[in-house]
Amino acid sequence: MGRFRVLSLLLVCLPLSGGVLAESHQAANPSAGASQYAGAEICKTCHEGIFNGLQRTPHSKAHMKEKGGEKAQACETCHGPGAAHVEGGGDVSKIFSFKGAAADDINHRCLSCHAREHEHSAFSESAHASAKLSCSSCHSPHHAKEQRALLTEKQPGLCYSCHSVQRAEFSNLFRHRVNEGLILCADCHNVHAASSRSLRSSPEQDQVCFKCHRELEGPFMFEHVPVKTEGCMRCHQPHGSVNPRMLKVNPVNLLCLQCHTPSLTPNAKSGENNVGGTPAGPVHDQTMKFQACTLCHVFIHGSNADETFMK
Ligand code: HEC
Ligand code: HEC
Ligand code: HEC
Ligand code: HEC
Ligand code: HEC
Ligand code: HEC
Ligand code: HEC
Ligand code: HEC
Ligand code: HEC
Ligand code: HEC
Image 1 (tube, rainbow, N blue to C red):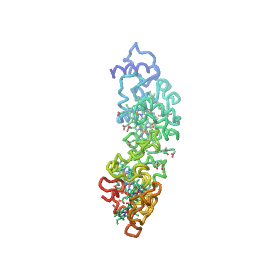
Image 2 (cartoon, rainbow, N blue to C red):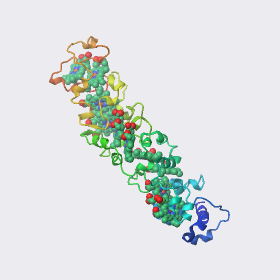
Image 3 (cartoon, rainbow, N blue to C red):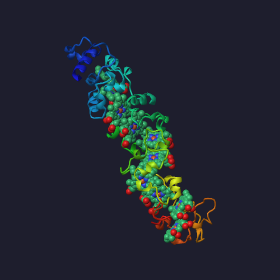
Image 4 (tube, protein in one colour):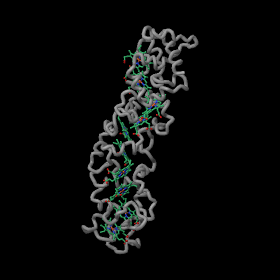
C-alpha cells in the first residue's frame, strides 16, 4: 500500500514540480485525480533533513497512519495541503508556516489530533492559552532540544524563561528539588489545564501533594484541624522558602501562635479558655524549652495515637 501510494502521489505532483521529479515518469497511474496534497516523499525531495528528523520522533506514528486519507498523513497533517507550494518550486506563501502564525491557528492545528487526550482537552481555557501562548511556545516538532515531549528546552529552564519569580522561589535553601531534576514542574502542574493555578488536581489543592506525601493524607483518629480545613498551603510554601520545612513562618512557635493562644490554665482541655471555637492554647508556658513546638508535637499533621500529636 505504502509504495503504491507514494508512486501515485508522485504522479499527481509531476506536472507541478517540473524537473525535480523527472525520474518518476514511469510511475504513471491514470486513475489519480488532481490533489491539493503532495505526500511526504515529495516534501523529502527538497526537505530531506526535516523528513529524516521527523522519523526519529513520535510523530512518525502520525506519519505512517494510513486511515483517514492523504490529509491525515505526514507533513501535511500539520502544514496543510502542499501541492501548490511544490508547484511553485517551494513558494512559501502557499504553505502554512508556523513562524509568525497566530497562536489560535497553531493551537487549532495541533489540537485537531491532541484535543482527544484528557491532558490537553481543556487547553483553550488554560492560563497559558489566555496569555496567548501556543503549542509552539514550548514544543518543537523539528528542533526539540529535549526529546521528552519534544520540548524547546528542558524543564525547569523552559518554565523559568518566563517565570522568573518561581526561579527565585526554587533557589531558596529549603525547596522541592526541581532544579536537580528530582521533581518536575509538571508533577504538580498540568500547563495545558484550565484548573486553578493549572494544578494537577484541583479544586482540592492538597490532592497534588498527596501524590507523593501519601502518609499525610489520613484520615487520622486525631486530626489537626487546619490541615483538613485550610490545607497544606496554610503553613507551607509549595515551591520553596527561606524557612526549614518550607514553612511560611519561622521560628515554628510563631506559626503555631498565629492560631493558638498560650494559656497557663492547666485544664485547657475542658474548653474553659476556648472562646468561640478558637483553638486551645498550650497547657504549658512559653519558656525556651517549649518554643520548638514540633519537637514534642511531632505528628503535627495528625495522629492515630495521641490527641496532642506527640506520638
Ligand atoms: C506535528 C506537526 C508537524 C509535522 C508533522 C511537520 N511539521 Fe514542519 N513544522 C511544524 C512546526 C511547529 C514548525 C515550526 C518550527 C518548529 O517548531 O519546529 C515547522 C517548521 C517547518 C519548516 C520551516 C523550517 C524549519 O526548519 O523550521 C519546514 C520546511 C517544515 N516544517 C517542513 C516539514 C516537512 C517536510 C514535514 C514532513 C516530513 C513536516 N514539516 C512535518 C510542525 C510540523
Ligand atoms: C521543489 C522543492 C520543494 C518541495 C517539493 C517542497 N518544498 Fe517546502 N520549501 C521549499 C523552499 C525552496 C522553501 C523556502 C526556503 C526554506 O525555507 O527552506 C520551502 C519552505 C517551506 C516551509 C517554510 C515556510 C516558511 O516560510 O517558514 C514549509 C513549512 C515547507 N516548505 C513545507 C513543505 C512541505 C510540507 C512540503 C511537501 C508537501 C514541501 N515543503 C515540499 C522547497 C520545496
Ligand atoms: C507552557 C508550555 C506548554 C504549552 C504552551 C504546551 N505544552 Fe504540551 N507539554 C508541556 C510540557 C512541559 C510537557 C511535558 C509534561 C511532562 O513532563 O510530563 C508537555 C507535554 C505534552 C505532550 C506529551 C504527552 C503527554 O501527555 O505527556 C503533548 C502531546 C503535548 N504536550 C501537546 C501540546 C499541545 C497540542 C499544545 C497546544 C495546544 C501544548 N502541548 C502546549 C508544555 C507545554
Ligand atoms: C495528525 C495528528 C497530529 C497532529 C496534527 C499533531 N500531532 Fe502531535 N502526536 C500525534 C501522534 C499520533 C503522536 C504520538 C502519540 C503516541 O506516541 O502515542 C503525537 C505525539 C506528540 C507529542 C508527544 C511526544 C512524546 O514524547 O510523547 C507532542 C509533544 C506533540 N505530539 C505535539 C504536537 C504539536 C505541538 C503539534 C502541532 C504543531 C502536534 N503535535 C500536531 C499526532 C498529531
Ligand atoms: C510540589 C508541587 C509543585 C511544583 C513542583 C511546582 N509547583 Fe508551582 N505551584 C504549586 C502550588 C500548590 C501552587 C499554588 C500556590 C497557592 O495557591 O498558594 C503553585 C503556583 C504556581 C504559579 C502561580 C503563581 C503563584 O505563585 O500563585 C506558577 C506560575 C507556578 N506555580 C509555576 C511553577 C513552575 C514554573 C514550576 C517549576 C519550576 C512549579 N510551579 C513547580 C505547586 C508546585
Ligand atoms: C513563553 C512564556 C511561558 C512559558 C515558557 C511558560 N509559561 Fe507559565 N505562564 C505564562 C504566562 C504569560 C502566564 C499567565 C500570566 C501569569 O499568571 O503569570 C502563565 C501562567 C502559568 C501558570 C498559572 C498561574 C495562575 O495564576 O493560574 C502556571 C502554574 C504556569 N504558568 C506554569 C508554567 C510551567 C510549569 C511552565 C514550564 C513547563 C511554564 N509555565 C512555561 C508564560 C509562560
Ligand atoms: C512529585 C512528588 C512530590 C509532590 C507532588 C510534592 N512533594 Fe513535597 N517532597 C517531595 C520530596 C521527594 C521531598 C524530599 C525533598 C528532598 O529531599 O529534596 C519533599 C519534601 C517536602 C517538604 C519538606 C521539605 C524539607 O525542607 O524538609 C515539605 C514541607 C513538602 N514536601 C510539602 C509539599 C507540599 C505542600 C506539596 C503540595 C503542594 C508537596 N510537597 C508535593 C516530593 C513531592
Ligand atoms: C498547621 C500547619 C501545617 C499544615 C496545615 C501542614 N503542615 Fe506540613 N509541617 C508543618 C510543620 C510545623 C512542619 C515541621 C515539622 C518539624 O519541625 O519536623 C511540617 C513538616 C512537613 C513535612 C516534612 C516532613 C515531616 O513530615 O515532618 C512535609 C512533607 C509536610 N509538612 C507536608 C505537608 C502536607 C502535604 C500538608 C497538607 C496535607 C501539610 N504539610 C500541612 C505544619 C503544617
Ligand atoms: C491555622 C491555625 C492553626 C495553626 C497555624 C496551628 N494550629 Fe493547632 N490547632 C488548630 C485548631 C483549630 C485546632 C483544633 C481546635 C481545638 O481542639 O482547640 C488545633 C489543635 C491543636 C492541638 C490539639 C489540641 C487538643 O486540645 O487536643 C495541638 C497539640 C496543636 N493544635 C498544636 C499545634 C502546633 C504545635 C502548631 C504549630 C506547629 C499548630 N498547632 C498550628 C489551629 C491551628
Ligand atoms: C517539651 C515538650 C513540649 C513542647 C516543646 C511544646 N509542648 Fe505543647 N504540650 C506538651 C505536653 C506534655 C502537653 C500536654 C499533653 C497532654 O496533656 O496530653 C501539651 C499540650 C499542648 C496543647 C494542648 C492543650 C490542651 O488543651 O490540651 C497545645 C495546643 C500545645 N501543647 C501547643 C504547643 C505549642 C503551640 C507549642 C510551641 C509554642 C508547644 N505546644 C510546645 C509538650 C510540649
